[in-house]
Length: 224
Image (cartoon, rainbow, N blue to C red; front, side):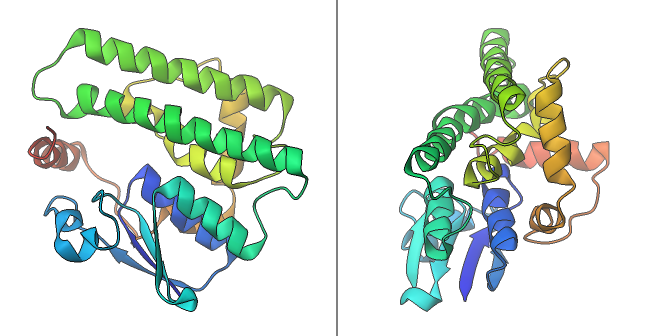
């Protein structure tokens, strides 16, 4: 049994989607980020960096894995699925996984901070990260114009980028004109496994504008 420690963020959803796609038995425990549960000693013993998600594989002597990309790779290796067998295509999938980990995720994260959470609005920072986010989404669109999925076949590369790409509006970035990217987002959102993964750690109600404003206020307290 795999234990997933997670929250309703793009990085957390990568792993729950992968677990659903792989049909692996797992339990999910929601980590209260606002209460800084991820900074408590119990959590830091699993991930010294104090970030979600983390998995504990109780079928492998309680082996803990942190960093969402490393978790996806671990699960793919464990099951022999969601990674191409051909060495070159396998490398392609890992290249696109690293593209998300080193580019799309960090840039969208910074766009979110300056556009949504920062108490002081800094136009240069907002514009810089939104432009870079749009550029990276254009890279995805160009790739998806050539291939149905990022590595040719559906893989952890798609699962890594999907939760970020679908949240583009939260970063204040439009995907107008990126028709291949929109096709891919729609295609993945239609998968039952993806739909189930998006509801982990729990079914969250649709938030009102007032709820969102309140949550932003809470998050600002923890943005340095």
